[in-house]
Image 1 (cartoon, rainbow, N blue to C red):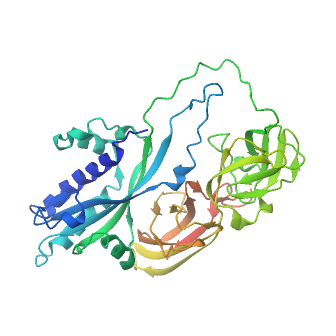
Image 2: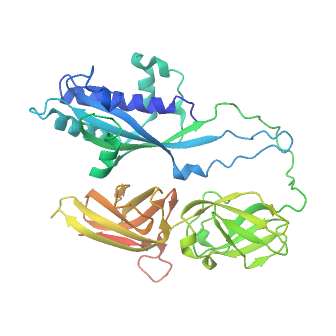
Image 3: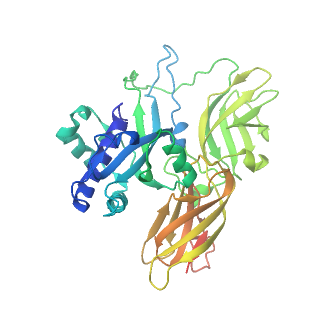
Length: 422
């Protein structure tokens, strides 16, 4: 985890990386980090302004921090952590006659596309720079999670809303980028317990306790999970919730915000068929699950589960390019879950080939202003061919179909879903 200097370190690393690029392309240009309404005073004649205009919690990490306590002194057994997405506005200014703003914009896009990941080496070089001595104690380079830089499509209305915050400030040619994910912990060191000698379960009398969750379907034969505690769960899965004191006269299971009555219940195991829950009530990604005894007004511990989306259909439109040229197109993916407009979605295309590997991924979606089960991606520079399609929603990846026919030429190979880019 990283300390309170993580956000400032990201900004400084971006500033340093862009400075190295634009000073080569436009002589005398400089990268600043001031409010856009201050560019008219004291700013260089040509340059790029890097402004952090918004910070949001990362949806995939919002439910990841399920801390446990010592039963005796109520101390947390691990550090609290927060995952953040940083939103930057990059404004280019200079001599319009010589097209300096447009040249700088091209340099920025080129630099950030070529370095779409902030690496630990880039961070360490920034911290070693004498211009950033105030970041000496930053430990962002130790963060295990990758920090990605992604362009954001802003329409005229969205850009106008951002610039109206700066009263009577002239508009500069701008583009927005998202940097994700930056993890920050609480800073204090958690109390370290003694080594475990044996495993015993302590529960409050009459309070249900969940030990583990299994899936009745044996998907692991085709998709072996790295962690036994992380079963592959689909909207059609049947969950086996195992624990202690689970049964009561009335027993409910709550997943996210929806409460349902399971199919079978006893003290040690509950069977819940997710198909019995309306699909519009479920969401892809990390969800919380707990057992409720409403008559006794008691609830169990919360256990996180990950619901994986299932792709129902893939279509392609607006194809541009010919011959051996890379293609641009709109790829629309229809899934079983309703995807919230705030959820993070990524399209992954992998070439359907046994001799060579090529792939493409995109987070560049179009027209996501409402919740929908249809997501359209604007893809560019993708070579013609047949691609396997996966969709990742808040870290939950859709599964590919495996050919299980021993007589098929593609036996034990991934065969679906696919999209053909002509």
